Image (cartoon, rainbow, N blue to C red):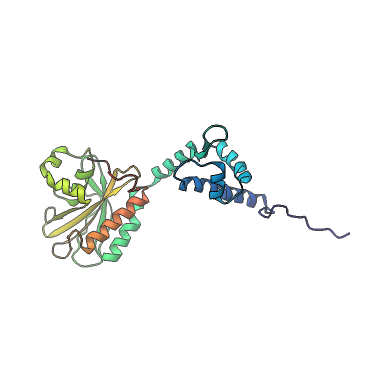
Length: 262
């Protein structure tokens, strides 16, 4: 007697249990992605449509996602939203992001596109300290070693922190007055020969997911060689690099229109 092959009632079923489990996670995650993209809580019908599956199937997956806290439901049969576990996972992931790692790809693009040197500084209690650098490929750039502490008033990086970090020296902020106000308004600081004679600098802030300053990205070059005009190619490229690094840290300008650090 010839043995007939088993009929596969579920076209998404796989012969290996491991494959079925992986596929279930992928399918269930479509519901998480739909909730992430939604402006607010969704009904079962709305959520199923957004995830591209029948409501009955979505309901089965949602029961499991609710059990582990990835999805929450407002009352019996109410609308669905992301649950507390989704929030804690997101915050844990954000907490693991190092500003150096987030900024490095943007710094490379800036250096490769402009040929200028670029470095990143973070707040170290009383002043910014350089934690990452990429040397320029063009002549006339100045290499500053990692670990260098930068003065608040005489460096472009320091002025960025004065403009956006509340705990920075209030006395220095008051002494610079309108200069700090302009840095805050422009989201860019420029200095020429203040820290190193014959060298100019441009610096922009890098914000984290809370809209707080996480670092300052700065390019430094020979005065007259580095174009420090606000709408010049170096300034525009550095601004784009700072925005890219901020986005990598979870910063969303539309929800953080006014960064903290007044």
